[in-house]
Length: 435
Image (spheres, rainbow, N blue to C red):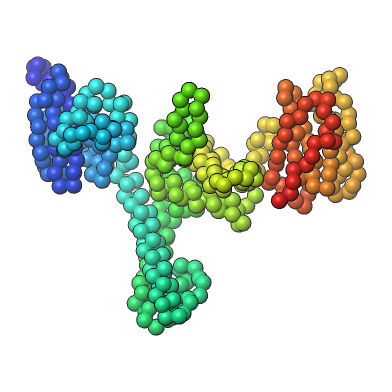
């Protein structure tokens, strides 16, 4: 093998992609500029220019053309590094900025260490095409919403108020003069959306059977499950299921310095379409039609804390847990338990040893159904009131807590805790105020 061919294999190429033309900068093994050029952003032009090189490292930024460019370059035998533009501040905040300079900067950063660019992996071509189907449906839904808003605004100018109705049945219920063409467009959009809904159902049933596992969760339907599978694509690339929340931008940003720990908003990174679907699913979970589940109870506990942004925090937290739960169901293939049957078996209290403090028998609370006083073999007595009871959570804990448990007939999803020290009169612990 000649020396020239070895240098050719070690070249690093920076590719600054634009809509019509792209600029390239080639660095040799010593970091010197070997070649600069400008080509058209088309498959034929890119393939002809890169035919001279073999096994080069090509660095480009994320953009509209980066998916097909990265796939095309990998098929040609090159190493494609797709940089995250949020992490390349050296380009965005440079005093002298041009396409030629940006291509050279990308090449030099990729030559030193590609991890500095926080490279991303684009999804495959088939997944990209199927995801485009969901994007088209979203565009049609938004267009129909704008037409409905336009119709209501035009009707008010003539002193009329259109009746309240759902978006699919809007054109059937509203028959106002001068709005026939607009209502006809709404009918056509509704028919197109229903056709796409049937196509989404078919895709999930035939090509992506794993969506059936995700649809066990009540708030997850065919659209959200299919979008989740297409966005993640390979669930094994996440070592922990909790990492999916950060991948979709549902975790708070962090800028700690010394003793300062500011509370910041979520990062909003990743796929905004998937994040929006999870937020909608979280709203349904916490809404009036959401079934009782551990996830709903978790969100209602956050809502009970109050504050200006309590609802927003609860919705985001539930959406983040949904992302983790869906990944776990996908990986393990387990059945979904709304009220945590596995956790109940795992947290079942052990039988105490004979002679220990937990073996003392104390009179328990009265039964809410019969009024008879029950007996408890573990833990101290509890205080029963008209609203519920303070119960100790864990006997073996060094700093036990009292947990507020609501009786039958009230909301079982609200649980409050307070610190309790041994020897404290539990009857003086006040129950939480009812809203």
